[in-house]
Length: 462
Image 1 (cartoon, rainbow, N blue to C red):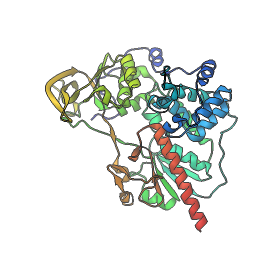
Image 2 (cartoon, rainbow, N blue to C red):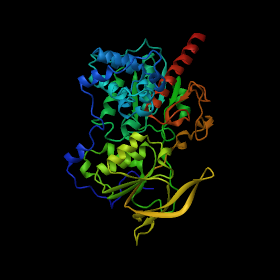
Image 3 (cartoon, one colour):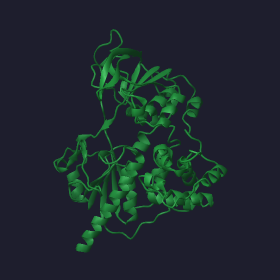
Image 4 (cartoon, rainbow, N blue to C red):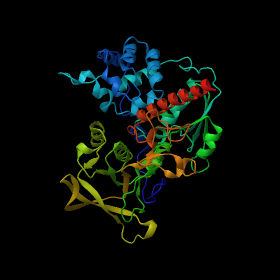
């Protein structure tokens, strides 16, 4: 499969930079002060608020909304950040329509319109005027913790540990911190270098060092970390993209959606970015929607999204599906990839993609089967978004091999302890929860609390 470099037969759209930049502004405009006041007045401030239970980080939603209504934005922001230090990015990328907003009691009765919790959360955090970082470090414990991965789970864990008074070193493989927020989220969801600015804000608490270019299984070993540090948290994320398993998958023009999104998010000139004229996206999740919408906004003439089951089985929310359709993406369901066609005369690894063949599918006796019908979509670009896997190379040293697994992922207990003493894990590398930014933040916070608890027990016992 093609790597992160774009195929040579793709070309820039020819659209002006200003026009392209306008297509990658905020997906949802921010609320004005008056809009936020009116929306906050709709909250019923439920005593047993179901929205709190639906939030993986357990933000006290009624309290922060009441503070917005009282024009106490600093108080509202502090309430959010106390539970979710990455609340700004979560307000933008979190699928609130299936979490807190779906649980809002306003959905009941004749109104059926939830309080816009995500936009209110963004309003509070974007407009708070903190004179200093809202949290302070406790007295130093003298303990040092290694955090592997500067994604949402690792950053959340590091910040909470710093609040407890521990010193933290984050080991990050990439040049920038942020993980999925920096490299994997649609550009129109996190604009204006928001991910980087959020990391800078988080680090203001002090006591956190980030070392870049450090990859576990390459120039970093778990055994060495456990010797040097009092505890280790693994927030590794998912490092490999699943393949289609078809002949010709190395054809130029076929690449993982996450690879292209990474290139797009780091691009300084959108009008210089090469894109396919006719793109096909294979997948049904939010990443599939993200790449499909972005390819269309970059200037692709046609974008077809193909999924082997029906719309109701798509993991992308109905809201995300509507965004795709509003941007001109054609969604084809009940079809699976059958074959890759390359341009005539192409040979070997330089083969250029020309079309994809698909088999029509249906469910029969509970199993997905082919109907016997096929169809072909002409295309010069295919983006695969059929899931990612855990990169086992990161746990290749002998010590890491002792980690118990749950399927392909790392097994943890209810407090995110692994089978190795002093080693904890969270985020996409464990099977628990959903692969969401907000879930990773919750894991990081819970692991930090477990690490602190376990370390302090050792101090008391000494």
